Length: 530
Image (cartoon, rainbow, N blue to C red; front, side, top):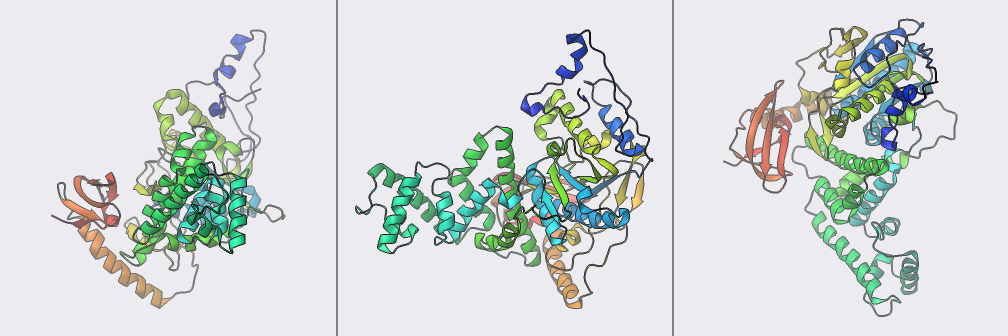
């Protein structure tokens, strides 16, 4: 028994031909098509059928439902990935009330594990109970805890817990017995462990010369990083630690599915650092954000990520689409429906891989009983850089008669407002921005008041926006190809080209140290040198 419309887990070595050629391989068998869907509304089933019909490697069948027609599938495109996460959180609150369902009948599905960070943070800030199904919360994942331990120790060498975690990761052949001897010596001398490591060439320390040399190399690495930390911002410092420690190379070398996921999580941690810097600099332009500042920001998040599922409290389910196969919920959100993310960039090179991605999208679409919402973002961080993804081709595969897109009530709204409203001021409801080429459109509901009016905050916001707007948005029009410019993070560079896209100006700048970067000029704060 098998379903050629659903993901076959090709990444585990499964082949769709095993299903498609079954009758040919076993001539005496009889095919029985199970075409009735007992779970979903007619609209959801019809929409999923229109999607999977685009696959060429399939057995034709007509899946149908005798359930109510139900609502159309909601398509929502937000200004950025943070807005996307908060939109989902807001919609969960509204949907739970409208449908009178428990939170555990709601699921948020995403293509990659790394996407959970933004969604988790939005859930937490919106006080929505949630859990990671068949996985760990972002800050509890091993690779994240390892990297953060490096951050903590570089900032504070008295953090012995962090030191013990990183001293032999990646492997430096510093084993448990060696560490035990170091601890015993430190205790005998009434030193902390780091003092003993710094004094590793002391002849009284009972270790052989090769072992001492490996430990000394680790100590030199930490000393060099600490010297750099005072003058390097959080992103560049974090990136430097990840690369010079060997973590980047170790994660990148693992080409397994799990290894790819760990590498993506590492990328997402860097994204979170750059996102934090950008938020702070919108509030206070050109403010210096250190690695210590970032660690203070995530300290509460990482302690809240306990992954405690022992109680019986209903919680929203957050999970990858692979983990969702075989499950069902009243309401499902598919997050990150963008080119390069879903489908993944590698899947777009080969027809078979693209069809497997479409089967996975079909799995996601057929999980809900009552309501399906598909979201994407116009701007998303990737490796700390801002990217501008297009909506997923799979959205265009869905027959538009089964979808409706949500429109922003004010399409002329300055994107700066959207970004700024997240930065510690009273956050209004995050409204979706239309960017789908579907025929059905619907006004977004009016924003909900989440905090009492605060005149002093409004005045402060206006002042900061006025200053930043003068620097960035007006300056964006002055940037031209051939100019030499300076960026606070990337340094000096030359503008290769400038492009207008939907009212936004983007520039490709070739930086002396960082290479070519694509920048959205209204946020880039480029200074013209010549």
